[in-house]
Length: 258
Image 1 (cartoon, one colour):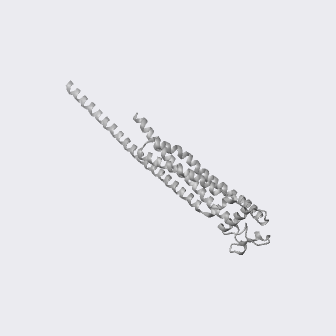
Image 2 (tube, helix red, strand yellow):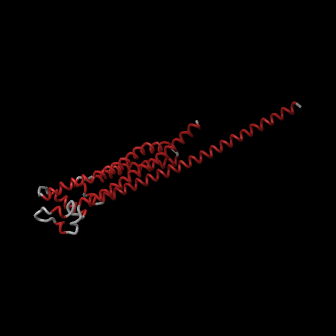
Image 3 (tube, helix red, strand yellow):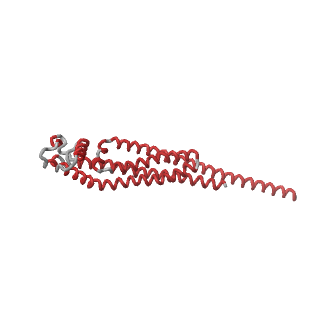
């Protein structure tokens, strides 16, 4: 009788530990499955965000090349207006760096290595600041460019009308009027004080002033630069968040294994 009770207890004990082991195995399997889903989701998000940042930086470089090829914008630095070119330099430098970090983030998402993810997070912080600087700088220039452009045109036009300007000033004015297809600052009436009327007075552009033409061109391009800067900063912030989340998840997994 005593042996039968002992056997029954042993059987119950074995059954208890088997059930407990199965429960632990089930919980471990569920945790592993949930962890696999989380890391797959983070890998995909980080890879897509990094690839999008790389593609965006390539587009920004193409945009800057387009601006460099526009002769209308190339003529404006001759009268001291370098707003578009200054913003373009910031975007070029930031985009070149983003191409590197975008590939680093993509490689980190594929290989699950912390080193490229850490490089991506560190450099992306500076890239966000670069794009934000470009956007803020463009908005500031959009407010002040009108007054500075008017001052430059007044000085150039007054020297030309009074015949006190150099040949370089005359060449600047001629080039500006030819490229922008305009006449004077506000139109042909700006040359009425001259004994010999300027050649643009007799043309079809006599009623188109260079101030309005240049200001419309600058306002449009500066607005585009501000959009490029703020959109790039938002995209990089999203990429930074996804890469940092993946790196934190990998670190937690490594600590749990230890």
